[in-house]
Image (cartoon, rainbow, N blue to C red; front, side, top):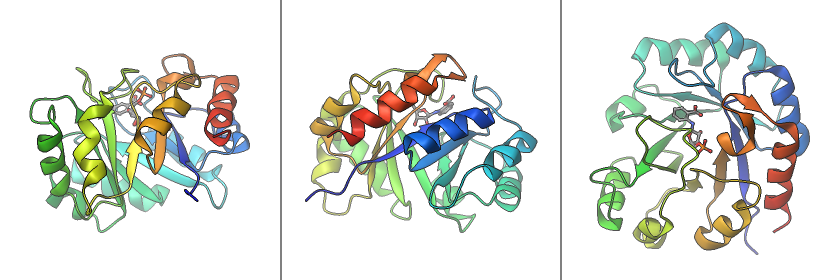
Length: 215
Ligand SMILES: O=C(O)c1ccccc1N[C@@H]1O[C@H](COP(=O)(O)O)[C@@H](O)[C@H]1O
């Protein structure tokens, strides 16, 4: 029997968002420590949000090309279960914190626009706890754009793949089909459960979890 698909809800900015995600059954919640995002939170806000995350739910802190001292400060103050590097971070940078991390790949970006190129890039991050696949967009993420799942073919087939996290434009109505097509370890969603950028919708969060758990 296939293990159930884990769910991360990303870009939570208010305490009620955390409660909605936890009550709906999310396995992980994401706090965006990237100032250019519509979902950015300060370290101070993140501390309040993190404190509301109960045991057995993972807090994930998301960074995009952050200075090392900012990542270390977040580790020290927030004690996240997992770091999410969503920029151009090198393997050496990701490993330097000696903390569990997930590396995001922007599928369709130059060099990541073929199955071979994508697998080659992923293999540089064997120390990652998971490989996350997002769609390529002008910004670094949270765009609501879907990726081309056929580009994941070699990563899925490779014997040395890390757990795969699927993201990029997932919606309550489409997530079940996306899971059936790619069989990821986990899914990650941000804009698909919002009323507007940065404004999470509890009903959409519940619908998203129900769609995944209904499989
Ligand atoms: O959520 C953001 O604002 C964000 C900003 C910069 C990098 C990544 C970001 N979020 C991650 O983007 C993907 C896809 O999100 P969406 O569902 O398409 O909106 C997801 O992994 C988020 O963790």
